[in-house]
Length: 487
Ligand SMILES: [Cu+2]
Image (cartoon, rainbow, N blue to C red; front, side, top):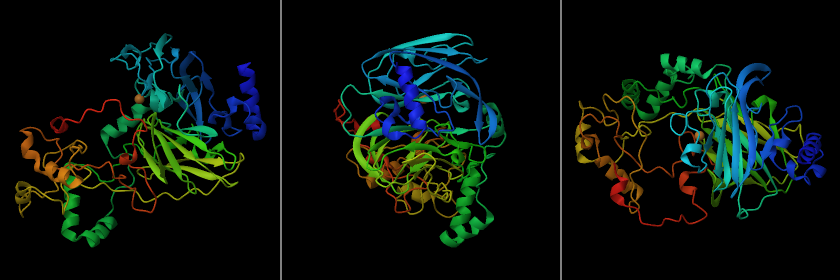
């Protein structure tokens, strides 16, 4: 009966008979609304679910490539689970290599986590592994292979866990939006290229012309110093992603921008969009021109609603937003890669076949020494560092012998202001870390309010981590121990 109902619902949806289709529950989720000419992945629910990983011939922009897929689609089927259920997930591997499935963000017993070499041995070709675990949480999650390059090749899919208690926000309709990347090359080939030249896919390096404009803006000496510092580190300030849009086609629910994945709505409805960043490395900046987005959930956790124009989603993160399109028109869902080398795109529309303007890509951002955890011009510096920055000494903005700095650490204690934590961090200079330790940042600064490189310079209200406040009080309310905060 369920199969019949979902088939009927799908037919109605694809025929655009929305009025009828919305009364059938199976029609609500996004998958049923994929473009009529592109079969959308299916939805699986219940307490026992069978999944098969296999090779798949996959077409992107009219060209056929080799994918690996769960149940014959990229992304794989949407799993709709229920908090409080005990589920059995039987995963069969039909590939010619060992495979695995990891349930990202799900709280499961260690042996059910699906990480080969850590929680189990993986699933050998032809074998079935039976996962059994209780569902103790709710929200938007996803699952993916944890073996070799299988995730990049297509082994990923979304999970929705229905909560035991009703959601604290209302919505009339929902769509899952899985963002990812596609390449016609194998992941081994990509790694081979990157090992030979880390910037192999970066076609947005700084040019001579840019040097002159930087020199005009900051002064010639400052520009030379900056370029020299990057050269010394053997790093590139335009290195935002190892593999870029020069190689990747960015996908929305497995569909390339030109094919325009479309989700439907009725004007006036509250539409919940569940974004899942399932790419191997891409950070996406997501916006829907003409609509405000109210963020209600992050990584499956309900948050105090915050209205934004744009948010950045990193690999493996999920965000749920609510939009209220009031007009009988199409809206572009635009997910621009952080390095601006490409985008995933789809459409929210009252009818299939509609589209809206696709925004131009913005100028690519450039990293600064501050991003690398190093002191910037004009920063408050401890006397020791200030002395070292005299003419002839190493400039404050470089750290000789440093190949791979760790990302900036947040060393802020609860009582400290941003400025205090900044100066405390700078006082904690490299000489304090002991000999041989060259990966501790020169300076750190609390940055949860920082929208990140490439965002925040226009009028858009961008989501920052400081906006994300849990809706429910975290059960453990002991005060933080300040000393444990400092490395
Ligand atoms: Cu994961």
